[in-house]
Image 1: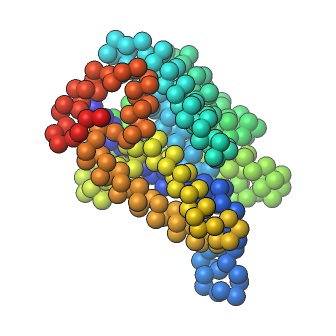
Image 2: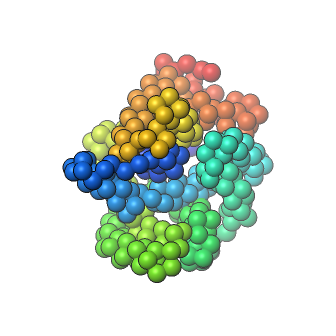
Image 3: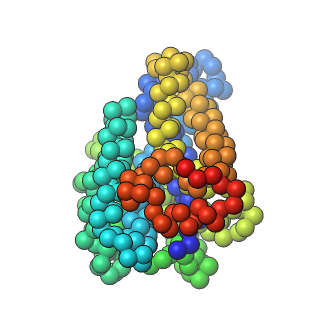
Length: 333
């Protein structure tokens, strides 16, 4: 089955936001002193932007894409005659191992949670899209109390529903609906941000506030990027996002490796301004885009993606061999 390129762009886009959150959670920072004037105002502006437009937004997109990926994986495995559920469970077990190792260096990372919650998607695959949409909405409402776990679960099921409806495969056909959703989400963003701040001020419930504040922005991000990618010239301009997203697992884990290494080498903890950390995050992203581009010019997928697939199937799967044989100039592992 044909690869859905839009999903790679969205994964890459999600990685762009995630690193700016991870770096300040992993490295304690200090603020630029007020007497630095412009630089202090710049840092405060960046932190405000992170709080309003990035924090908890991009993990939500990642969760949604996980649900879409689940549907595609099961559907394609069934089409090949494979034992789809068994393969997916093995896939989750390997993801758990990646997550467990990653957790030792970055407590609170997402992969372990995804590997556990992902099992809950299995009984939902055979349900009709309308049922899954209803379940996703119920979970979304409950996430006001359940926090990030409820939000992740609801996004998993929304992603499953989106996969069942094949919305990313028929964007042109339903472009008016995409535009309508984009406009509605854009209009609702100020209300979401207002509600987020009110909940924080009145209750201090961060997870609940972020659930309420992030939803409209997440929908706007996904719909606007998807619509932009319907133009071939935009696909070319944003191609680095696609390369980043095709190696999402490798790049996600390597971000942690690079951040922690730079912290040790440069002694950043409690010494670096967040403004400096943001610059470092930008440089890491640019480096990863370049490395992803060079790697994918020679190989079919990222190194950890290859290990993940190898562990899932217990061997290099036949359909992978066929794909590789069609990629002129690419070297096999």
